[in-house]
Length: 329
Image 1 (cartoon, helix red, strand yellow):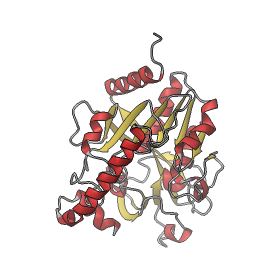
Image 2 (cartoon, rainbow, N blue to C red):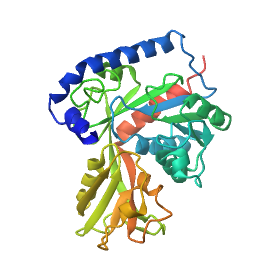
Image 3 (cartoon, rainbow, N blue to C red):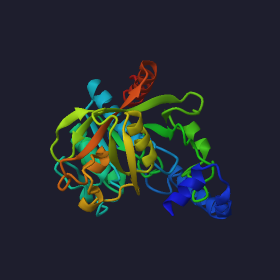
């Protein structure tokens, strides 16, 4: 079913048009909900520190989490104490809690645990992002929300919408007939649109690339060059919203990839990493945090980092700094 929807939404096909009535209903409900927040009919929490939301208007992976990691590091370099909040999709429980590097992915979610281990900053998860923010705001100058563009119960000072350059807005229809959570016009209301990878971009959008930095042993922590397996056949496991992007990245590194796509955030088991042929098994860092306890010596994750052109990076950071540190009147 997942593959059918992805092909329908992004495969240049009109076969999902029969879902249009449901899409109209979804659009009406989401519009009413947003208006309820705008006019104060539903409560919206305003944090004591600025909040930056990094999200998207489409279903599926667009590269939000690598951008969050980059953004946190850049803001730290400018002298700010940064915290991160996330829903913690797929975790057990819904209440807000802080996340440490020693946490269990099943309890806090794979992406929050990745960020906690990579960044070492105050981090909290919660279905209600306001509750997560309350756990951090006393310790931070600014908070970055990984996802949550449509979570209007949390007020925000700066919005970044991330688009997949190749997929774009798909067929341009609302859920479930298409991949759009909100109308395309929503992009005109955010502070910055960032396009991940090559492809068409809205006017004024910034461009980023996700690049491989190194390979890391899932269990051992050993490090190797990103191209260490160039020319070799490998198994590639990816429980992502857009696993093909990961497989394509591996191929650009010169690897011969045997693909194993899985639903986004799916827990992994030892059996799913044992292919019985001795070939290396490569995965994302997001998947690695779920299987460190049982991964074999041939299991590696590919660390990635976001890259902007100098001009685009400066534009983004200067606009954020102006929003979180407005000049005194």
